[in-house]
Picture 1: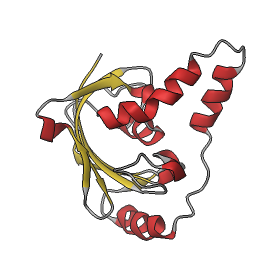
Picture 2: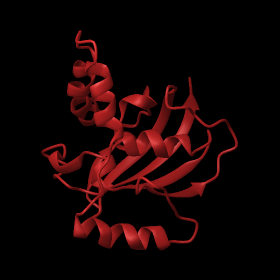
Picture 3: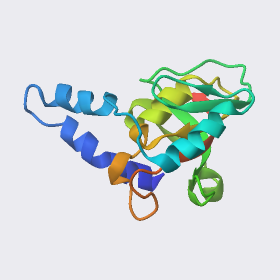
Length: 163
C-alpha cells in the first residue's frame, strides 16, 4: 500500500496547485488512456478475458467475480476498505494487505484508474480478480523497483466496507 501511496503522491501534489486550470489538466491526464500496445500484455489479457465469467470493459480492464458480494457498490468518491494481493503476470507478488495482516483503506478516486473502475463493479462482501493493462495502471513509467514500465497487473480484491 505504501508503494501505491508513494506513486500517487505526485498526482495529489499536482492537484493542489493554485493555477486555475491545473486540476482540470490533472484530471484529464488521469482519465485519458491510450491503447495498450505492449504485446506481452495482449498475450495475457486475451486469455484472461476468455475465462468463464470474465468481462472486458471499454478501458481494457478484465474483471471476474470470484465471490459475489451482497452489500452496496462503492462510488468513485467513496473510501473503501479492502484486502488485496497484487501480482505481475509472472505471478510475482509486489504488494499484499494479506501479507501485512491488515486491510487497506483509501479514497477510491486516489488509486490507479483500474482500481477506481473495477472496485465500483464490486459489492461489499465480494471478491474479484482485476487484470489491469498498463494504460490504466502505472503506464510506461511503472512504479520502480517492483513494477516495471508497461506492466499488466493482476489484483485479487476483497471489498470489506465502504465509508
